[in-house]
Amino acid sequence: MSGFKLQYKPFGERSILIEWPQVISGNVLKSMLSYKHRLENYSFKQEVYIKYAYNSILIIYTSTINNFYDEVLTLKSIYDSEFKDVKTEFKLWNIPVCYDLEFGVDLEKISNKNNLTILDIIQLHTSSKYPVYFLGFLPGFLYLGGLNKKLHFPRKKSPRLKVEKGSVAIGGSQTGIYPTQSPGGWQIIGKTPINFFDLNAEKPCFANAGDKIQFVSVSRSDYDSILTKVERQDYIIESEVIDG
Amino acid sequence: MVKVLHPGFYTTIQDLGRKDYQHLGVPISGAMDLHAHRIANALLGNGEDCATLEITMVGPKLEFSCDTTISITGAILSPQINGKPIGLNIAINISKGDELSFSKIQKGFRGYLAVYRGFQTEVVLNSRSMYQGITKSSYVKKGDVLKIEQKNHSNKKYSSIKLNEDYLDSSVIEVFKGPEFDKLNDLQIQSLFNKEFTISKDNNRMAYQLNELIKNDFKDIITSLVLPGTIQLTPSGKLIVLMRDSQTTGGYPRVLQLKETSINAMAQKFTGNKITFKLLS
Image (cartoon, rainbow over all chains, first blue to last red; front, side, top):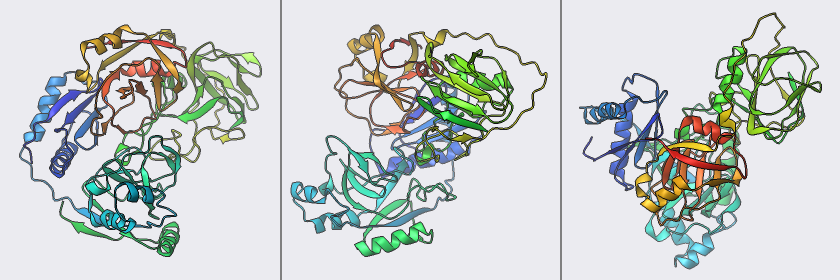
């Protein structure tokens, strides 16, 4: 899948940045994941590390790039090459969230300002399937798309010094989960017992770019029992295979 | 083993960092001054991925409970063994019971202590570099016991290296254009390369903020990738130089990118130091 006009820019002496148009969209994500897959399967002359975000791929070479333009020609030919995309399996993950006011400390504020009942907020937040674009910011932090416009809400003017691990929050047009305790400026609407970054697991984060996340509202007592299971490492996150 | 009698100002274990975990949101980390880290290892015949102790501003006080060979590089730190001054940038034999301490730093900000075959602290995601939330400790504390290998003294002659230490106090930081450089107008470009900038008190392993502002009306970019050495320009005009523990992505325009050797030079700067940027093509 090609068709996007891409920009190639040098980034320091041994990286090349590839940029898609400045939009967040499912088509850009598909195009990017496909290109990333091709790059990962290409035999570069030297070892490379490939990173990606919403609309960009960064290729970090191990040593200095001698001729940037030659290297870009190679990259362009990889983009344009006929390529049978290997069918990648994407998953929809059901993430339990307790939206009790005890956890969702900013729910009332959003309810007042956006003219929604708290039940409306929960209903809207749990009815979307949010695509995972990439991980960044903190280990295990998922950048998700697709937040309903009615739920958009500005970040706090000055961040909280301590946001608890598992907090589910809204920041501008985005929603996300704090994978560890950290400072943070997003508005907190609930909490999940699920671990998004576990160094003891074979894969420290279960979710991949291209997967989707759906939040499921659970009671306070369900939250507690799931948390106990997560801590004993015998909770399996509900998931199903979906079409990318 | 090495016992930490006093941890110094901010001391961490560092190696080359985690190069392949940014897709999980994990920073690269690694020695702030990779050049000094590599020299310290090379002096002992270690591989460059052997972990060293990164010392910041005030050195620690350490007691060795076995024989080994060490080297100290980077900032001019005035190290002493049992109170007697020892040299920098040279391999030095240490005997069981020796105490290593440091007096006042004379030049630079970060020094590196290498031991034979490197510090053997825990490996997480292929690196020993300490980082909060990844390794169990995020810095070296009083009473810590750092594992090292014993090495019996031999008559092996180590080569000494004549080092160019100019970078420790050079104020010129070499940069390339960053991905959003073209957003800058002529006036902003002139300010960037004619002004002198001052390192603010907000400087650490994650980023160095600069005091002087570059006024702009740039909008945030869609969250994109950043690297150690990326200079971001915030809406309030602040320049932020990202360092080794930088987050993996960011939303501020990336106006400049430090040359790799200049990241090492930057790591030796501290609050109040003046720098100027020199654009490379």
